[in-house]
Structures are given as structure tokens and as C-alpha cells.
Image (cartoon, rainbow, N blue to C red; front, side, top):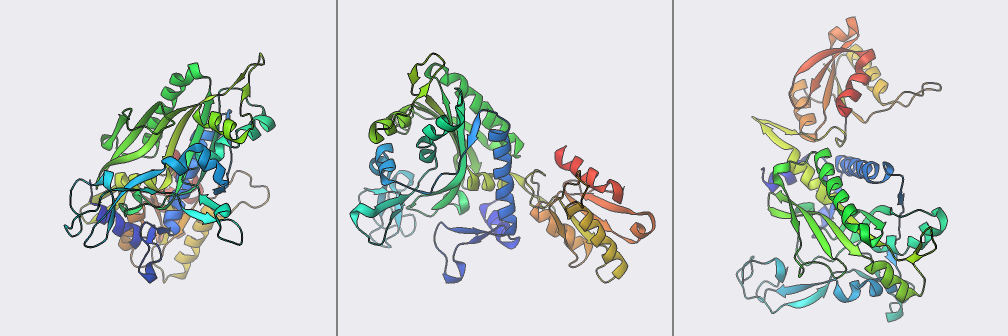
Length: 437
């Protein structure tokens, strides 16, 4: 596996990820996503939504608020239990999570560490004009609670039958004590989460189904399977709401870490919110019996997925760096080059090919699917290939002098570097076949 430094360098050099607030010296655990990083994240989220939501008729999507009533977090146990042990170096004053330290002394300077004290990881803010106790609120540290408090709304408006799920993709915020490894651990991140509601006696069946679904997902996005392991939590590791949790762990360049989690949350959340809010959060079955469903929760982080994808995709072929992203995830599906940027006829023809692939259809052309395609006329062809390989573009299309004669172009495959001639009229079909095949 490549080093994390190479991934970080590539990410900044090619416009995937930039340090947050960089011109002011940066802000720990924050990152800005450039054009290609934004596109890669979007593709990951769209693919997850397609696989976990749109392909199932019994999954309902929501977009819950980032700031919820503080009563939500008191009821869920986050105010009391969402804490980590903090230690501080008495010499350099760096702070660390005690449960993640292997050394007894400060890893930075070797100084003596303080005794652990508990630190709540939720970001506190205030709602209203004054900063008073009654106006305290929190940025959500997870997306799940917005789903549970909307359970009744989904029941009342869509009348689903058990089993069914509620899903969302959204931001979460955690006031992390220590700097993470690149985008692995951020204070602001996105989660792709689904709460699947079922009868208690059926939870094991659906737990296994979602285990298999996550396994299939890791293959779909191109994760190197030899770096993936599954680990079931011991009783003393599980969250207070969980009776079974399995982590999907990935061997990152900095060590094996949790990538995804699958938890059996029982009916803890719905039962607790029912008791604390006074609102009945129940499902009434076909014979009129009221039950509080149990929950299976697959939780997947967007940034961690992105990092694992980039680590798995990164490869070096001599001096050539290739990001072998799955075509569905690649920011650009193809790049179009004129052989020479100073030849007007080649540039004009190349522009027409570019527009053929990217422009939305005219009226009546309903079968035209626009593609995200890059235009590149900088430097020589070799440098353009090199740049597109680094950002993971699956196909490069060159318009040359033969194109002007026979209306064919050269299409080059990213991974094999093999080239072939294709008719311009068949180009879109060739690319789509390569992406979907």
C-alpha cells in the first residue's frame, strides 16, 4: 500500500482536497473539497443512494435538520454518554484521546501526560439572541436521531408496512480532541445512514442482509478486499443502545481503522423518545397491535469512503501514477484533446466532439445522456495523459488529422494505456459501455 503522504500530495496537486483555512495557517481537522473532490464525493453519495434507497421500494429518504432540540440529545443519551477521555501534555500542552494512545508519554515531545478527564464531543451553540442556558443547542454529532424523531411523520404520511427503512445523507459534527489522519477523522463530515425498522424476531435476518449489502458495496466501489476485515464488538465495546455491532475495518496506510459500522440498536431510540417526548412512536400492525419496531443501522461515512477508495485506487506504473477509480465514481468519465492546440481545424473538430458528449439534447433528442467530460489542450499529449491518469479519468479521446479525414478518434483506456480508433458517431456508446461494463 502507498503512503498517506502520496495520497495527500495527489489530492492537493490535482484539486481533490485542500487544507481548511489554509491561507490563515489552517484549522485542524478541517478540509475543503476542490472540484474533483466534490465530484468524487457526489458520485459516492449518488451511488449509495441508488444502491441502498432507490433500489428498494420500502426505503424512504429524508433530510433532517442539523440543529435539533437539545431535548433530543438528552433523551438519546448523547449529552451524558458522548464523551471521550482527554489527556494533556504538561510540557507542550498537546491534547490526546487517552484510549487511542499506545505510549505513556506525549508522542510529540515525550513530556508527562495529565490524568484523563472526560470530554464531550458535541459542538455547543446557542439559538436566539442571547447566550443563556435556556438557549443552548448542539450541532448534531450523528444523523440517526433526525430519523427517529421523524418516524411518526413517515408512518402518518406514507403508511409503510414493516419492515421498512428511513435513510438520509447529511452533515455531522464532532469536536475531536486530536488531529485525524487526513480526512479519516474530521470535525465536520457526512454520513450515509439508514435505520431499518423490523419486528424483534426478524432482526437477525435483516442484520445478515445488510452485512451482505455492505460487502457488495465495498466491491462495487472498488475497495481492495485484502485490506478489509470484519470485527464484531465485544460487550464492553458496544454503544449503550446496541446489542450487536460489526465494524468493517480497512487497512489504511496509517493502520487498520473502522470504515463502516452495522448495529442492532434494538428499539432503544424509539422507546426512549416516546417516553421523553410523550408522543407515541409505534407501528400498528394488520391486526391492530401496537409495537415499537427494532432497528438495524448501517452507517457509512462519506469522507472515510473517499479516502479508502483513493487508497485502493492509487497505483504507480513506472513514472506513471494512475488513480484506478471505478468509472462510476470517476469525476470525469472522459477527456477530449485536440492533438495540437495551435491548429484551428483540430481544435474546432475537438470542440464538436466535446460538445457531442456534454451538451444536453436539443428538443426531441430524448435519448441523449450528457457526460462529465474534461477539455484539455495544455502541453503535449503525454502530459495530458499523465494528468488524466492521476485524476482517474477512464478514457482519453484524441482528435488528430485522421479525424478530419475519416471522422474517427483515438480512445485510450486509462488502466491498460491501450488505444483504438472509434467512429465519432459510436463514441458515446463506447464510453457508456466502458463505464457500465
